Amino acid sequence: MREGWTSGTKLLAAASLAGVVGFLFVMDVGPREARLVTKALPMVCLLLWLWPVRARHARFIFAGLALSLLGDVLLEMSPDLFLPGLGAFLLAHVGYIAAFLSVTRRLDLPRALPFALLAAGATVGLWPGLGGMAPPVTAYVAVICTMGWRAAALMGSPALTRREQWLAFGGALLFSASDGLLSIRLFVAPLPGLGYAVMLLYWAAQFCIAASARAAPDQAPVPVSSSRPI
Image 1 (cartoon, rainbow, N blue to C red):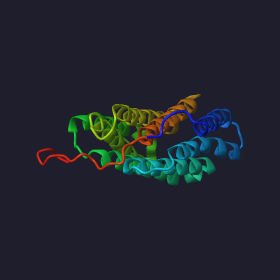
Image 2: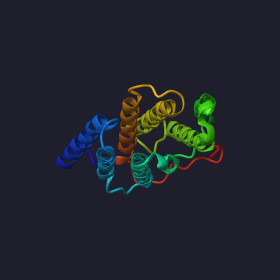
Image 3: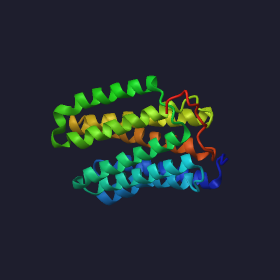
Image 4: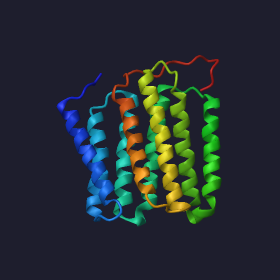
C-alpha cells in the first residue's frame, strides 16, 4: 500500500496545483498553448501519482484518467474536436464502470433508480437546446449516470476499504455535478463564472477516483451467490 507524503508526492501535488491555478487564470483569456499545458498538467500528475498500477481495479481507472487527459487536450485544441473530446470522456467513464464492475457485479437496483431518474431529467431538461447534438449527448448522459450507479453499488463491498468506497462514490458524484454544470453552460445558458466551478469540480472528481484506486487491493471481485442477480 502506497501511503504518505513522499517528496515525489509533494512535487506532483505542487505541479498539479500550479496547473489548476494557471488554467483558471488563462481559461477565458489566455493563448491556446497556455490552456493546453495548464489544463493537462493536473491529469498528468494524477497519472504519475497512480503509477505503477498493479490491481485490476486500478488499471481500469488509470485508463479512464488517460482517456480524460485525451479529452481535455482535444477540447482545448479546437471547437471542431468537441465530438472526439466527448467520445474520449465517454470512454473514460466506460473505464471507470469497468473498474467498479471488477470490484462487484451486484445489480443493486435501488441504487440505480436515482441515477436513472437523473439521466431522464437531464435529457428532458437539455433536449430543447441540443439540436443535432442530441444523440451523442444523450449517450453520454446515460454512460455517466451508469458510472454513478456502479460507484454507488461499491458501497458495502468487502473488496474495498470504506475510504476507497467513499472516494469512488464521491468522485462519481462530483463528476456528475461538473458535467451537469458544463451541460447547462453549453446548451442552456452560458452563465458567467460557471466554467470555474466546472473545472474545480472536475479536478476534485478525478482526484477522488484516482485516490480510490491508489491503494486498491490486487484481488478478484468477491464471489456472489447464485441467489443474487449479477
